[in-house]
Length: 381
Ligand SMILES: *Cc1c(COP(=O)(O)O)cnc(C)c1O
Image 1 (cartoon, rainbow, N blue to C red):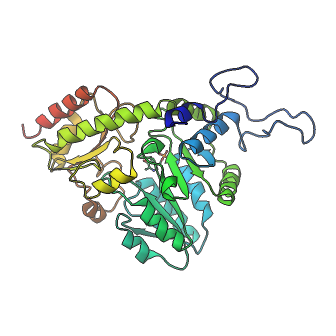
Image 2: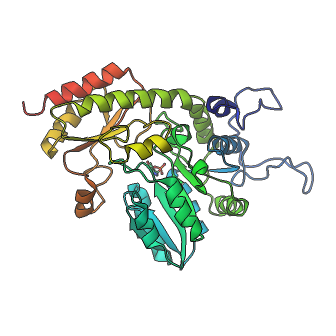
Image 3: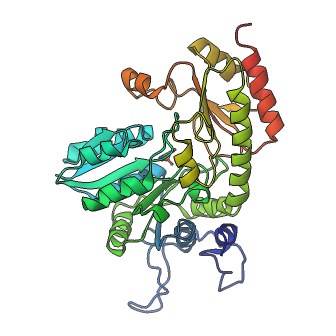
């Protein structure tokens, strides 16, 4: 089956009781049992729910994995994944990972004896050098936000597996339509479904997908034990969103390319960060590993004042955090998404005061470009 067919059908048979084509929202906390120990596979809705189960099967299929679990947020999914390691274990992490991941690891989980080491995983020799006897996991994100650093999934997986460590990849930025990490040997894929998978900026959610049966049983056990489940309604929203994932990603990718090309040639733009650009250091790797470049484009206009003018002059683009929705969102990483990152780290990564990040939506491409153009035109006036 092709991707779009899988997206629309996997995990979703017409309802056996009524024939409903769309999986219903099973808004129930419990299920009637026919007799002691006799039930239809559902006992209590924290443990399992048919709407959530349909989504879990669907997301697993899209990533080419056997098992999927849906959580209340991307962070809840990542938190559950980290229950695969324990006190005394060493975890290597991409140093430019999502801010919330950085916060969870450094400020919360490090208190429980898990040792985190942040390295630039775009150079795999850094991963190799960081491996220790107790390394049990390598957690990567690719491309990263907002400066689009790409990590070679095959190379990192080879190194981690040789050391007996699992590889986790946060695939939120690409979605399984543009990148399927399990095909490169990655063990576990995590998602914030809040972004491209749901795609409509109307729900928070997360997912973990994987192939290893023992690890999957443990994730299921954690999901039931800690209980950070995705609700039936939110599961239904993501199922609905995923049905158009292939179409949306095609358009996101197309407009992303057009916006990046426009910015690259614009006199007010000093630098762009976009894996699809030939000026991107890892353009060849991105081409090899991804089916497209996605819709995240960052660009530097040189100063906070210039960035402020752009951000406050746009009318089609919306000034907001988050990404991956149908609407174009524009933000200022240094003061918004990455405000908690230490200034010297921001400096090293290129998250300057003049950096602006766009999540290119699926409005008419010409309208998006015209809006950015008129906003850039206000700089220096
Ligand atoms: C948003 C995001 C998360 C966190 O997801 P939530 O749904 O907001 O909890 C994790 N990783 C990446 C790359 C993200 O963009």
